[in-house]
Image 1 (tube, rainbow, N blue to C red):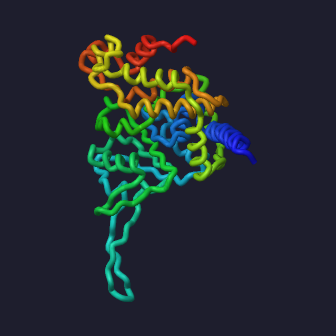
Image 2 (cartoon, rainbow, N blue to C red):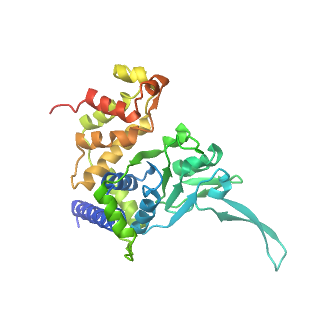
Image 3 (cartoon, rainbow, N blue to C red):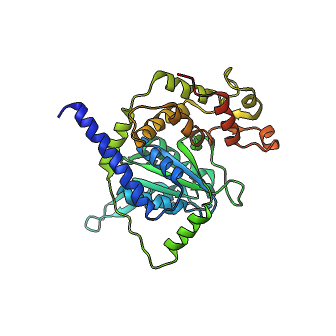
Length: 334
């Protein structure tokens, strides 16, 4: 089998698995097409995803259903104000050998040692515990009592949060926000979709989600995504959009300089290109288009752009400014 034939087979398997995953998720989740696409894109890139929405918008159900369809080991942490870092990472305990009486330290892994980690209501816990996730998210490892423990790939943190203005929440630190590839917004469903939810959940109907892939395959899919070609002009356009969010950059429009305190880092450009590659493949294309970049700009940038008081007083949101930025930096003509 030639390399080209082998690659075509891998791409075909990727697209078949993607369709099967969406089909399984659809048994439970109604609507939210864009959200499902964005979470799957994050998984195929190997990134983490932040899901923001009001209570009752099926954030937790979506993550649990997705992990079942992926055939991965799933753990859930319910974040609370009294949660300690060791509750996440695990801890060392002293065990005594009954035969010899000898005592040894034994590491008991925490829930972080899984393939899919649901960090539920991550903004309900203080920054000390939130930061326990940082090393795991970036380095795929955690340190307990000076010993480093590796987390097996694939490893995804899918964190849910309620909007910051609700009572009893702690804003996530910028360094931690930057490690999430997407900030996905879950909105209310339409009236017809809500009726369908009632049909699914208030009768004796019980949908069963089957695993359609596995950890080994997902790691292969992540490699396939990175092989998708991107033209220099499109990569430059992605960089141009990211640089346009920085008020100190000469290319930034005047409204960015007026309303933004801090713009996105180079990590945003990396994620934008990687996610665009995954989106192209998910839409059965073999190269990245400008549309991939513009479609993903808002979910990738909305949690990386810090607005100032002027924006707050003029009642502008990050999404408002990002839409204006995309208008100010239109797709180059062929």
